[in-house]
Structures are given as structure tokens and as C-alpha cells.
Image (cartoon, rainbow over all chains, first blue to last red):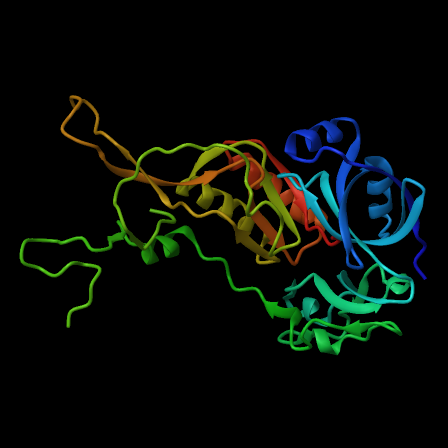
Length: 217
Length: 139
């Protein structure tokens, strides 16, 4: 069972980008709380506590707003343009007994057989949508790729999920493939394929001729 | 000529501006590791090709290289010793507009050490500061 992290939140009286920037300067992260048919509340959280919790894979949090303590899950995160810092958090109110739909990361384990034959493992999807109790959200879904040969694929439906966890993503969703690497093309080969100059759509080559971009009827 | 569009609507384009940061293509989406631009610049098709060659040569048919840039913008210039006027010059080369945060190259199917070594070689070909980034698996 996932252990809940305790966060002390402050209600944001002023919202908007200017105030959010000020908050970030003071070491806090602006956040929003919604769910359970209640009004959304704009809050701010301590950055260090929040980021540390996220690094440890915590999804369930006890958030104290004023004197009220509520259980919430992290629904969404926004990052800055470099993907370094968290700039906004979406929190959703949950009940301990209720089931929630969340996206969890897929973790590949092992060395595939196909890699010994010159193939490479390509991870097509790195998240799976699952449905489970708010207290049982797994940190990640571990997928063993040991038995994958060249040409084999692994779909979302093939994965064994922990007890009490239901798959929401389509079972035919492709997760992992193993394929041979095509030989890298040389610059000369690429040059042969590319035209000297691109075709201009709708350009009339000479007077009386059809435009180059249109088909002749 | 390296990469360039196959069909265009207009042969020549105005210079345009490079305001702001990358709001798309700013995370690793295909491979496991990537090279992220920390500055804005025009990257020519020749530079992109040089980066591709550097990465594929280092990887020796291991792993897969993804190029997240495409030179959509034509740059024109006037011939040498030509007087000003007489209209805009002819397109000389093609560039990709790169804003800070854009992931330019990605590598998958190799371990982190090899990917880092390959991307360092690519970064040396780039005219801008870059950093090595990993795919974000958490939310």
C-alpha cells in the first residue's frame, strides 16, 4: 500500500501568471484542487516537499488546507520549457475506498533475447492507464522483456498487472517491439533522394502550361 | 543538398523572429535519451546532416537515431559583387528554427553511457549550447 505524503497548503487569494511567478520565486508551487463535485480551490505547496515526494514516486497525498485534511492524488504536472522544474500541479480529491483512473509509467526489466541477435528494443508507449483503489496505485508497472526475440511485440493486454489493478488502456496498444536496425544511409544516398530544389505548389512553369502542383486531367 | 522540403508553397520566405521558448518538441518522445537546445538559433540542413553522421558513425549500427528537426525555412542570399536592388536573392540553403528547449536529436536502444558519448559528438557539431536529457517516465 502506498504511503500518503503530508503536505501543508496555503490558499491562493490572487491567481494569474504574475502571482504564480512570485510564488515560484518564494519556493512554492501553484496548484489546483478539484473533484468530488466541490468547487476547485487554488492553493500553493512547498516546492521541496512536493518535488521530493514526486521523486519517490508518491501519488497519494494528504493535503492540509487550513484545518481540513484531505486525501488527494496527483492528476497532472506541468513543467517549464526545459522540462526541469515543476511549475504547476493538479490535485484531485479522492476517497480511500474509491477507485481512480491514473496513468502509471511502464518500467522495462531485463535484457531481451533479440538484442543478442542484433535487434533493439523500442519502447513505443511509456505510460499505461489503469484503474485501482487510490491507496493501491503502483509506482510503476514492471514489464519483463527477457523473452522478446527479434520481430516480437508486446501489447498492453499481455502484461500481468498487480492484484486489484485493472487495465483501462486498450489491450491492443503497442508497448514494446524488438526489431533489427536498418543500416544508416550515407550522405550520398540521401542526396540522391532529395531534389535539387523543392517543387512549388501552384507555380506556372511557362506561359500556357499547367501549374506544376496540379494533376493533368 | 541535405534535408529540404519536397514541396513548398512559396520559394522564398521572410526572416521572421525567434521569440520565446519551445512549447512543443521539448521532451524526449521517441528514444530514451535526447539532446536539448538551450539557445535559439537557425540550424542549417548541413549541420543537421553533420550531427546525424556523427551519431550514426559512433553507434556502429547499434541503437536508433531520431532527428527531431526539419529545415522548413529557405534562406536566400545575393551573389558576390552584385549591386543592391534587383529583387530578393535566390534560396541558398535551408534552416530549421530552433528555440530554447527543443529536443534536436534522440537516441534509443543503447545504454546511457553510449548514448551520452554519441550525443556529445552531435553537440559539438551544433552552433548552440545543448544538454543531455533523459526520457521522463513519471508524470
